Length: 560
Ligand code: ATP
Ligand code: MG
Image (cartoon, rainbow, N blue to C red):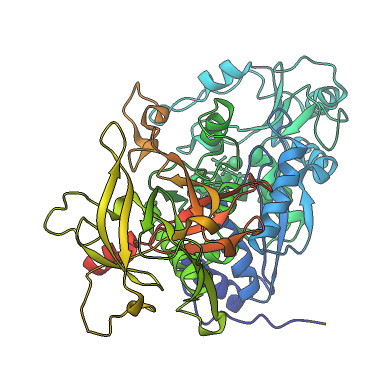
């Protein structure tokens, strides 16, 4: 059965235009892409962008996308990463056509290398890695030919077989493509195809002691899988001539490589090497620390797969590198949670309030709206009593002119409750206000006064007798500068770690949140969107603030 490609109508960009042209011209009759992570770390938001490009384009054109592990360097790769990547791709909601590993092709790649040797297009080189670098030349100077470049085909075949057999020490020999040491493109100056590495591979064990380089493995793996469009980030642009050279010399199916700009996000780093350093050196608690831009970190922070996909769709693909404002990522999450997250009341920095004229033994239930954006979410009943907690911030003993919340002698509205008026304060020995004495007006139940008098502020609260103790973890940017990747020479991105990126507070929430499962979202009214953290115990709920209520992105884009 043949499936007609369904041409995407909604999105258009230079990649989709190219794919459409390739189908129209008959260069390809179907579309197949791949997402090719190296299992040397956890996926981050940059990979989500790559997945959005690979999986969405395949889907839009009625094609398929493979998940292929680019596992050609056993010294850096681990099964742990393979497992985590599979889980993260699934979590993000992408379904691959086939799960492949470049290591599945080691035998075939070896055969391809032999073919190039036989054609006189590859040779065994005895230069050391340092010498190879030295012979390579620079951007302004041509390279020099290796003294081993003109070995006979027979000698090359013999030496390559013996490299595979483990006869030579690590680093003593390589297999190189014979192209052009004077090429303006350094990648074409007899690039290394195979190196000797005595390391156990997470899948092939010690079967191999020679491993193909990225350049020799990638295009051929694409070809074997029948990939039509090999979409990758911009740093591979200069590798494209080499990608095409191998396929041409091997005379095998040639996919088309197209490059797009990497995602850079302000106030964070998106390099697995740097993220690994943050973890290894203990600057964060792990790969899933809610401050990390890894998919695990974002998930724990409270990001949903749909919010991340929405963000990727908004940023789109471009040919030129740029930095995306992290506020735009936050905007995608806030937008979604605004519609879906139930509202509750919680107090993060509690100040005790005693309502003097409210009967000591009395409690009552006040009706509260679960989600004003979603009438179907209904209402709940929040207990109210004589002793409450409010935010310390919502009271000032000597308020400046524009502070309208609680102050001595001032009346405010309690959300879903009554008007209360501050009639006195209790201080500790150091002079800090530790308790407010208030009165309430029973006639204002539900939030308005029959005599029409107004208050200028509404504050949230939790009944002390019913309050659930909670821990709340409040996050700020991981770095203090928007471009931690661009530090001056002699500096490190670590010099700009934000010492205030995490603040932990002990507060109280209304009882309706009791027993919430890990991953459950709420809007804490006036405080932001929170999610239940896996550190939660039967004794205490732990929440992460996923994102605040103020939209820095919408504001900035409206002004701009
Ligand atoms: P890192 O530098 O973080 O290790 P990488 O490119 O080495 O990244 P891979 O596992 O090789 O990581 O990447 C898999 C795919 O994801 C590649 O196609 C790569 O181009 C793409 N990718 C990686 N980082 C980004 C990013 N920041 N933006 C867009 N695509 C990315
Ligand atoms: Mg890589």
